[in-house]
Amino acid sequence: MTEIELTRRRILAGVLVIGLAAAAAGVGTFALFSDEATSPDNTINAGTLNLDPVDGNFTVDNIYPTQSTTQNITTSYQESGDIGSNLNVSISTADPSNAFSDQLDVDSAVLKVDGSTVETLADSGTLSDLEGTHSGLTTLNGGEDIALEVTFTLGEDTSNTFQGDSLDITVSFNATQQTE
Image (cartoon, rainbow, N blue to C red):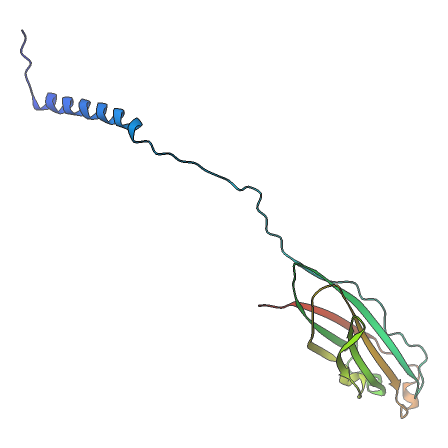
């Protein structure tokens, strides 16, 4: 019989072979169960705030001293997603230095929501006094009709220098989302 000489190298190689065989055999015996579930159709949609286009204009032709007129500008507020909003109204003239706005008395300026008065912006003064931004007037929740109703009178003391004058007025409605 032949003697096999044991060297360090041969012993190390033998241990390595035995270790690899044991590892290969153990791989299959230590498996764990697993499972996975997927939810693929998830969406997040942002709500919307929408003020419909403004309907109506302040249009008065040939007004004379002591004559009164009531003018309405309306819009509608639509929303989705239960978003409450604060309503602001801005009133401005194209030329703030036009003295004609000081001759137009504002007998009343009221903001109505769904036909009910929610805020009185003015009950006296002039158009110049009414100009500016009126903030936080009411809370809107969606589906409301909004109207700004203003009654103007050309002042009795308006002089002849204002004959033929005109004035351009801009009214802006702004709905701003409320925060919690």
